[in-house]
Image (cartoon, rainbow, N blue to C red; front, side, top):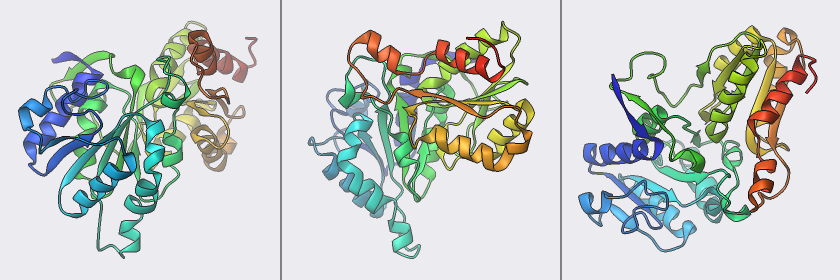
Amino acid sequence: MGRTISYRQALQEALREAMLADSRVFLMGEDVGCYGGTYAVSKGLLEEFGADRVRDTPLSELGFVGAGIGAALGGMRPIVEIMTVNFSLLALDQIVNTAALLRHMSGGQFSVPLVIRMATGAGRQLAAQHSHSFEGWYAHIPGLRVLAPATVVDARRMLAQALADPDPVLFFEHAQLYNMEAELPDDDGGPQGSVDICSAAVRRVGADLSLITYGGSLPKALQAARELDAEGIAAEVIDLRVLRPLDDVTVMASVRKCRRALVVDEGWRSVGIAAEIMARIGEQAFFELDAPPARVCSQEVPVPYARHLEEAALPQPAGIVAAARALFGKAT
């Protein structure tokens, strides 16, 4: 048995559990304290743990991410919250040139046990500067681990493992998922409860088509899979959930079984995660394919503000179904 909680509650419980378990863990970022977090994930934590462990920062991502790196080097276990992935670009130097490189540049003498959480993705009419999906950019960088939990269970269980990692971990929370509710099992037993920060997960078993996705696109892929099932196409849905390092084993096992692959990525098509996965499929499973791999990505425009334009710019279940039909030579 379990209980039903939201993705937001799962993250909040994970933060609280981590702070109770280890006095070195603290949270810092914009509006994480008095305001309770932009998405209310840290609500109540300031009152419980005090201002030393829940720290509101100035509006300077470059500054407070750097402070988090320094705290990690000094033996603390900081969790740094960046309000939205777009704002993380202001801290690129700290993340890419410092946190990701220190182990290598110190010859293994130093590690940076830092977790950086941030909201990502579109669908909330917040316009271009608050709505993009840049996790693929970070997945390009050696020295980082990049996580994208898309279920309540992963949101609840992944943070503790991220904090245990001796190297920097980027933790992407799709903003469309915060209100999603699901059952949280009492333990991690069974395939639906098993969580790690190394492997992809099979969310739906099928035999005809591998639907490969992550983050906010997972619910859309599952909806598309249900619609395809009514047409006699059994789609297997793979949730990548770990974008660096990618789990080739799970992906290729599905592709070799299903012999057709469709990648769904809210990032842009050019030079993105979908392109990387398709390249790996071509390298490792080319002769098992019955059709070229395909992808559904966001339109190559800044995310629009207007609701109808925003929806048109993003991957949607109807577009996923149409792309899947095309792989079987069916009219859309």
